[in-house]
Length: 163
Image (tube, rainbow, N blue to C red; front, side):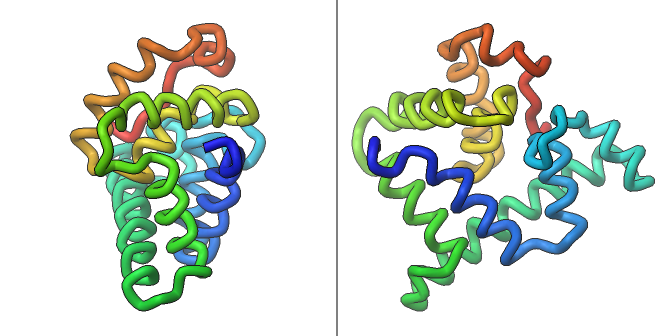
């Protein structure tokens, strides 16, 4: 995993900028603090966009599904150098979901991401949302956040999660 350290955010940003709309990108930037600001809550984003927080949650979920689906499609079509495919391949190589110890590898990726990330409080939900379906990600988030250093998680407030 060492040779891939730090690539997650690079691949994620490339994939989202290539494939998502300007609106979806702005919502992700606000939610996960990617624009250098503290992460926003769903309600804060909803107020900015003039929609409900439930609609923001739906937009986020759809955006992550689109990135995952596009990555899988690009791989199937041999377009492995495209941004969404690179993100999918990176997560597959790093997490090795078919091997035992998946939760430990997810935790290691998040801890390494936390080390260098400007979006400290959002690393766990962002990584989990990118790779897993909604329910497994929600369950794992509870387990994983209990194993992360609390001072790193509280630096910017609560863990932000797409509910």
